[in-house]
Structures are given as C-alpha cells and as structure tokens.
Length: 106
Image (cartoon, rainbow, N blue to C red; front, top):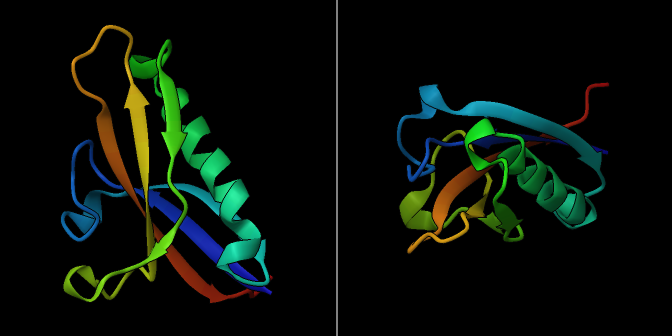
C-alpha cells in the first residue's frame, strides 16, 4: 500500500516553483497511482470548487502524470492540472498540483 499526498501550487503558478507556498489538500492510499487517480481528480475538483472565489464556477482536473525530466523536483513524483471555468470569463484559471508518493506508514 502506498500513500499519495496532494499539494496545490499557487494560482497560475508552476509546480516546480515556490514549493514552500504549496498547500496540502489531500492524502490518499492505494496500490499505485492508477488506483487513486479517480479519487485524486475528485479531490482537485472539490478543492477548487471549495475556494470562496470560485463558488459558482465549473471545475475539472486532468489525471496525474509523472513529472517530466525538465520539471523534475526533489519533492514531487507526479503532477496534475486543475481548471476553474468562471461564468462569462474569457479565460480559465489554471492550477498545478504535485503528488508525493511514499510507502504507507499507517
């Protein structure tokens, strides 16, 4: 069993920058990243929808992907994108989420 810890980066920020300002938003347990993907997507959508400034906005998220070599941090093994679509907005608002995978120490 593995533990997956999910962090949100700054609004419009990059997952490989300002690591000290990332916010913990969830912890999930599963055999591998595929086993927790659907739950992580739900957590990201709920996290964004729960922010007061996005109360009446549509949210969605992309499935986790392994960190690319050029973006690799020592902190995250996976990243995923979260999207907020405000009504009547010209652009969506993007967030990046980082995921730390460790052996479960429950």
